[in-house]
Length: 397
Image 1 (cartoon, rainbow, N blue to C red):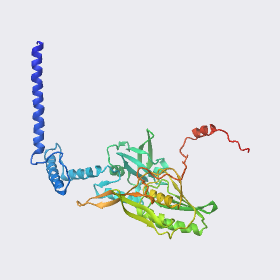
Image 2 (cartoon, helix red, strand yellow):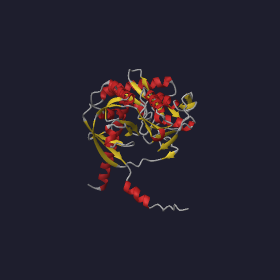
Image 3 (cartoon, one colour):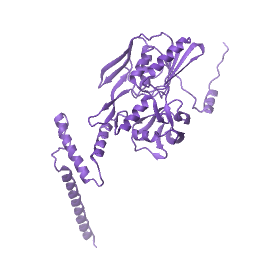
Image 4 (cartoon, rainbow, N blue to C red):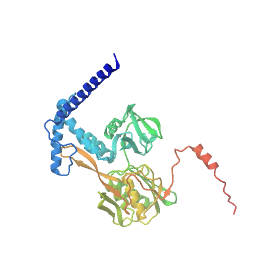
């Protein structure tokens, strides 16, 4: 075959291929355009525009169910669509609940009683991140830390799962075994633990030396404010002259409960502001009647999140407490459970909450007055080497 003949054949093949592509594309467009006059790229600026798009959406659903290679139900398609709406919010805390069970899991997590390993999780840029383990839980005993990224549950990769699916796999019957693989500082570590009935006592307290009352709040359950009040009064009766309040690794809970506790010690003034679309919509304030005018230190760390940060911000801005520890988690948004018209439910981020002085908390956290890091998990040999490298101090003056 000479070069001229080869070039001619090549041109013919190219023309055939281009024609096939054009025909395929044209068929595809006709298939999807059938029955609609939708204009691609049209703006949606009114309810009328939205109604037009919803008509197209219905046609698309019918086409998908009719022509997809596998069996589909309208329920599956609609659930996917609702999930997509919430995903478009780009907010890790807004969640569409596909079932009553998913909603119940969330409500259990803040009520203080469930069966699992005792770990608070959040969806963080597509990853399942640990907010904090519950003190005394199997997760804490095993060594799970705030900030760990869960990558496997019982050897199953969970990278493609949403948060609710991961929670469903972690929870289970008390007495059963569970292995979690987490990513920490680039390394994969596995922890095996046994599920327990987690019934949290959210407030623990004791009187320390020098008449210091110590109160630990592990999370803000629906009655934590009553437990806190009881602990405070009993410690005062025992002679407490100052307080250490500990919300380290407290992942949050009910905002109203945290606000109540804040008001039990602080002077009259704002506790927190709720902001929506740049406007302060509501302010929760303290009456000042609970101000004991006693020295208070609040312990915080990276695991102090959400409602814990409301408490921290209120006490820091009002001068109620000196904050000691490390910068808090930075979850400055408040959610509410909403019932949807189709009978399902969702958790929706409704507001940003700000400190009394209007400081933003979300993705920033609250910086304590004194930065003190817990060296429990640090390399003591490396710390000793660093210590020996310090210049000697001359105590003779």
